[in-house]
Length: 367
Image 1 (spheres, helix red, strand yellow):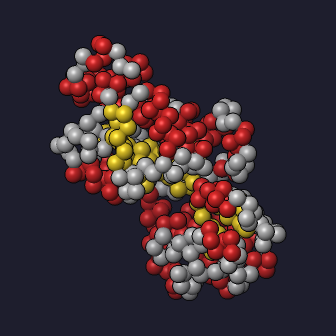
Image 2: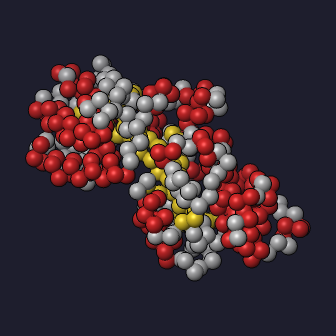
């Protein structure tokens, strides 16, 4: 509950504190007080079943007593950006304070002046490769490309990309999308190529295409979009997809069939989402408090409950902050230590090669 004196603080004073840079020197207690004076946080595009966001939102509300106004849970990253643009002069409930978007949207939103900088207390534990040096955006969670395996059918579970080429996996391997259009599938091809190329990002796209051409020639590649239903039925008993989707399928299928999720030994590629605060946030201090919560140990573990690896995962494991029962639900933590976070330039270059050359090199029309 807000105290009497907090109720007397006007929003205009809080906004002035933020705009003059005073907020950057706030203690945590001062930030909490300022956020409570604003009384509300507006979020957008956060479905409760995505990465454990339902529990994260409830945890934030319980901890700080703020109202969380949830806009358009099913929106995409582009919709979030448009919501900021459309509400630049609007201090009402349709203006988002914060966004959670794909990696490529962070730099463009910064360039367009749509987001503002803020560095959380745990800033130094966020990998440099997935954060803006000035604090305009920073990675929040990620998944890695993994093998989702129907272990009732596949008795010899593959451990690495090269294994998939073997005779044990005839008519077995599918991508979770069309590599001419799906980012998840493109990253799957890239990851295979990164493994073949010994970690050389410049060669990963070309080597990935060659890998899938061989997989197709060997009769191992199934040119359909892999999902939980065909996995369970056995028509695509091995799917290459984000680990959090695979782990969620494991829970949904409840042992029928038994699903194993394997992070490959090499070519471990991570896909990242990022957080940012709107430059026009009606509740700037509530937005900063939300960021502090998300990047605290508590907030990071909230995402982990939803099988999304929080960006501070390696730091949390190293310091013994992850409960053993959580780790037991995931592939071994050591599997994620080799995760590679492709830069925006690397992603763009790989997408150009893979989408345009798939038909010519691989020749498998994924449907």
